[in-house]
Every structure is written in structure tokens, then in C-alpha cells.
Length: 167
Image (cartoon, rainbow, N blue to C red):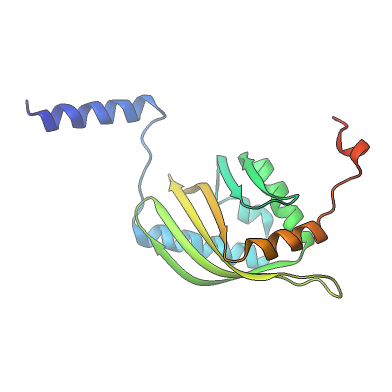
């Protein structure tokens, strides 16, 4: 038996023991899934949006603002999108590239709040795809300072005593 066959078997065994076999889709399937995800987001159908998420999804939001940080699981990610909806956010795809496990998108993202501060910038998202679902997403802003400034204006924290209460 060759060293390559032994190493390949060890890698496969480790992969199976660490969580099972993840099905890799074609780049075209992954690109279509993310395109469909954005169509669902544009329609405002948050149940449809959530159907694209793995149960144990991780969604990383950059910055130093009230919505920043890693959201864990469908419930937290859905709560993030509910808050984002209050800013009347929109997204327009510019580009999508994909392989069997990742989709990278570039999109114009903006808020549309009447008479209030808004933000408009380009975002890049890296989506990790497993078994036909978004397993992880990482956001990158072209202008993080503008995003931070907007989010602090749009999403005020509760006063300190209320913020410290556990429910």
C-alpha cells in the first residue's frame, strides 16, 4: 500500500469522525444558491432566507457597533436580520465567484431610512457551503468606519441598567 493511499485513508477517517461527510456542490449550484438567497432577501421573506442556513450556522459581522460580532445558529442569525430590517437595508449583487465549498460575493449594500442617517458601501461576503446550506458567512466592508458610524446611530443600546438585566 502506498503512502498516499494510507494518508488519504487517514484523512477520510478523520473527516468522518469529525462530523460526517459533507456533500460538495458544483460551483454553478453554489452560485445559484447564493443568487437565490439574495432574491429571497430582496423579497423580504425572512422564512425563505432562513431556509438557506445550516442549523449551526456562524455569521460574522465586523466592526465596533451594536450589531457586530458572531451570530451562532439560525435563531441568532434570524434575529440579526430582523434588526437589520429595521434599517431598511437593501443589497444589489455586483459579482459572484464560487468553487465547490465557497461563494464570494461583492454587493452594494445600503439603508433607506426616511429623514434619518443612512449608509451605502460595497460589501464582500465569503459563504462556506456544506450540504447545500450556508454553514458560515464572513462580512467585509469597504468602509467599516462609515458602517460603524451608521450602526451606532441606527441601533442604540438600551440604557446601562436595562442592558445588564438577564432574562
